[in-house]
Length: 152
Length: 286
Image (cartoon, rainbow over all chains, first blue to last red; front, side, top):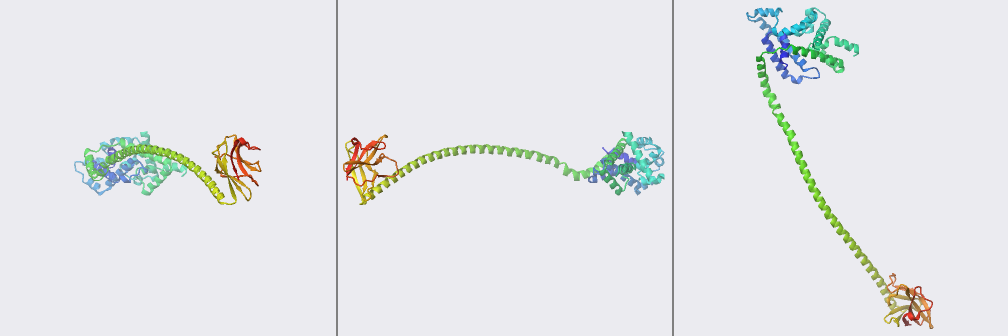
């Protein structure tokens, strides 16, 4: 039952469908193997699973495999690949969530985009956006508070 | 941590980073420790987690079916090899064994216990009846034995009494100090006879209940012993009936210095001053 939600998390970081599916598979294998390390006093099961998915996704994003696969894109796919890289087009699966986040103020949206969708740490996001760490943290918090409000 | 500090801590955004997994292990540990101590932090974390979960759920994407198939293939192998044979088949068997057998055993045990109790009750009741009848028998035996004992005690005392009297008689017969005066039955009772023993030395007079054969006196009368001194009767005292139960067979009468004859008359209770000659029972000369 968590599979679509986790795939949603993964495919936001890794837009490449096949790789995202590989990561989803790896995520479930890892969840299965390390289920005994899950401690329900430290947080919800989904949070734990989501972090496994995110970590694996980020690892994949930064691995040589991924970088090589980017270089080895088929010539036919070049247009959409370039579009993806430049945020010209959206992965249609990801469309809904993007819209939801777009209701946020632009500065909150930029931070959440990096941290949640691109798998940036808050330190990396601060560097990228050229903002103080504290501000990034506050903006992440405000963005999540907005999300909380939208669900209540 | 004070209330203001706690508020500042929550607002710093560190809890969001914790939920996003964007903290170093040390920082994450610190968050956990603070969460254990403070309810507010726990609640805030739960709210963030809940929001992130809902966020992810709402924006879930169904992966292609091939992923699921591949995944189940991969997990299924490990499932079949490790978990399934151990957990799933063993569980129902275990519950069956745990639930059914002890209950059966319990009921069986209880039934046996009930049967044993009833048997014990029957045996106990039978034993009680046997014991009761034996006890009654024993009581009867004790009663009859007591009766026998009393009888024997009576016989023994009687024997002792007669033995004493007889031995006294023998002694007195052997002794030269004692004179035995035999009195013969008179007109009213010719069969009667009685002995009087008179000590020549100290003049004491004895009679022996065993050495007398007098008719039974009625309740209003008793016998009185007389000594005839120079033709005059002198009372030597009264004595009881021949069947007297007094322990001494010998009875000491009043002493008399001299006497020519002894006689016994039947007198009213307490004796008389002068003998009633019509009731002279026995008499004998010295």
